Image (cartoon, rainbow over all chains, first blue to last red; front, side, top):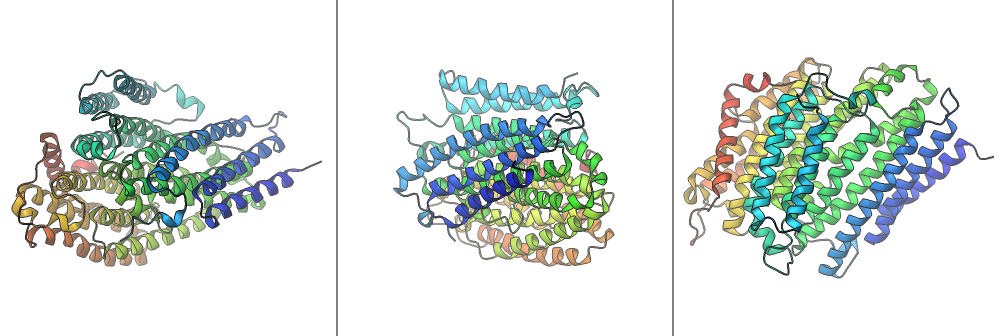
Length: 106
Length: 481
């Protein structure tokens, strides 16, 4: 039977993997995947907290589960806008690597 | 009497109406959309003065609060959006040149409509008292800003700024939601009022979880207000984004970020075991932000980038006010500073737009000889730069003065010392602009700078307000919540 600690461990791993992807990878699409992974790590632990810390009346606190739906929706909106920007960048520059983003330097 | 919820709803309805008007070709000239938006927002602004005292049905749910502070910032946000739209009308030729379009003028209408949606998000943000609401409002603002920053699709720097803002903004969102998760895990609440009530009852064993969540949320909000060490997106994004969007980011987004920061931190200042750690973190952030923002601004040659670093520096003074929050007037000082910051930053950007159009760029060198070409504009820029630096008889001086006073009363002598030293370095880099305008010769073929009538009216009003409030700060203090 998995406990709260197991879920939190997996969610922490997901968050660290996402963060490592953002910091270490050089392809913008992969970086974007890492960002989505970080949001999903939060979703997992929100649902786990909600299910394991029951209210006095024995029901889970649904506030957290509602927040999960909002996070999923917002993440979808963010992907829609983000991919459009990345496509526009690719059209203009023929690259999706962060090293090639060097127009803005003083 | 108006129910306060209608304010945001009518802003969203206005945005949807403008989108439809654009899609069905109701507006022949694209700038008509901007005038409609300005008219609608002005009507909502007037509506904020007719809020019923207890007509708030949302308040019961705990998601949404209408107090003096949130009303003041709703007006603040509405005024900044109107100024952004005024600036955008002036900026329209550059947008139309840099957006790929099948027909002349196509694809530039949304440039006036997106700020309206951002405005609604910002208005919700300043009223939010629940993490769910804070998250949704913040994302409405951030996602619409992604589009606005990357709007000029033929300009490499705008696209690049948009990509950088996208990645770092999404990163801060990731930190924010993971932080909220840990708050929820440790307290069982997403509501800030409820968190405030249960916080003293939390067993000490759960304190590390709350501190972890607090640190993550602080990182995320540090991104929004451009505090060091989370400032690295600021110079690039400010330089690359279209100028009106830069002004919007610098003023409204930062102000709303500060208000959310105040609301999130408030419960933790009441519990002694968190108070000390939080206080230390704020002092450290303020110190780093002050020193970095001011020193890194010194070698800049691009005016927008300079204002980017200057906005980091201003965040440092504001954080200093936040660290001194124990003082009775510290909250008022922060709000006063933000109001003064709105006036002087918008003034500088309103002048930058026509100068960019006339001289083809936004480097400090493009201001050369402006005093001979357009003495009025140069004088207004002189007032803006003096106020940003904090010269007496401008509103910027009193902003800094009140914050330093509050910090002195709280015994933050180190911060005040850093503040005074960095103000001196501020004088140097703002003076570079003044030197370019008054001492450098103008290019051979340069005539006077063309400027639209609305922009010049806005510039005149802002410059006068800076001077009047610099002599009679009581006028503004009387209006503070």
